[in-house]
Length: 518
Image (cartoon, rainbow, N blue to C red; front, top):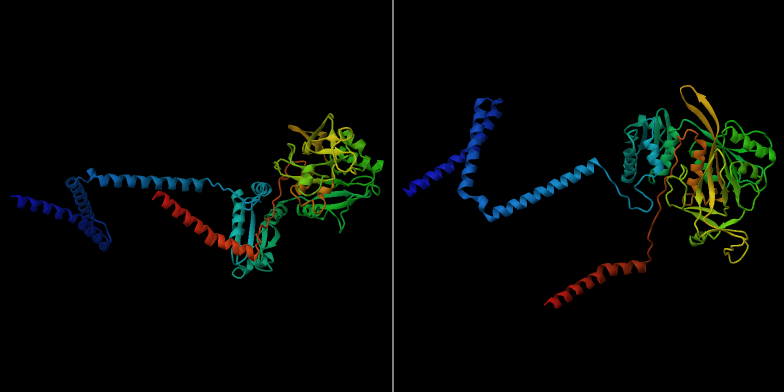
């Protein structure tokens, strides 16, 4: 009897093995016949039922769920699934919400605020064409950064040999040429055949190709001001103005009584001698009609602008500012270091970054009806205005000197007219003025230092934009080269330390630990 019962159980086991066989028969029949009728589907269904019953019977027979190994295996599977779910959720969130952290010194993999603002505020599609057979990963990463900022930006790599028509359309001369296109306007950016794509160049060209206006900046001449000719000390500043569609022209108010109507901004840069009364009157009249004036006034000079400045509530201090921070960074005590900026569009993105002013004077302000004056550049509390720059050593004298912090830059505006407009608020015209007690920060050599160029360019942008549509921000910075130059002795020493000395020390520590535990 026991043998017969055991045989029946074996028969049941073989019966369940027919399940996978029936499923295979059904799939074969359906595939060969080309149609899934009753027979193939019936075989598949019968095989599935037998397979499920076989699994249930086998589980009941072995009671595998009560085994310790099964419980451990179940816990391991659950933990594995949990890890997979967490990883999948992290990847989903990373794909949906991209967050990048740039730890490089100059923000090498992060676009400057100006670049982001320009791309985010594009009013028309802009496309960058890179004519090269190879795609530099760093250049492509930079272009991807631009594309992430706005849907109006795109880029494409083109092989000039396989698509000669497009290359001829842009006038490509060599592999690596980069062009930016907006509508019917195109600008050559640079050639990346022997280098990397520059964010500075690309942002500048995007701004040029999308700008629909060109401003004109007049520099007053005739009183020892910094010139704008071929040998000008302002060549860096003039080149950046050109990149932003500003044309620079000299202005002589002795030869012409009025400031030209096409003047976007008038700059008076470090006059060594006083202006004539009629020139001051012309500048005042220019402001009264809604003009924009930038005054860069070094100490120990008398530009004869007191009457104009007093109408705006400003007074010049003729003493030279001394700042120990300038000495600490290697420039000298007469270089004022600024990291405190006012809440103004010119300086809104400066944070606590530095700007440097060599030989600066303080400016005082008092309230004037209708004039809004904002201090934009302020020195530290350790600085002071020195009355005797020739004294040695330079020390603060409370009887004759003035303790910091000192304001060396103001941005001012006043409403000069309000024209009524039907069914809307009156259209106002503002006169704007930026006064800085220093001009040396804008000359070659200092213009490229820290935020000096940004102070100059943002001031011009604010002065020239009555509609407040001009982008004001920090310019993109070029990559800094950081190389470690080692002598042969240092290289050998580094090799011995990493390959011999450190491994021997580690092995000795391990032996000592083993000996102590033994």
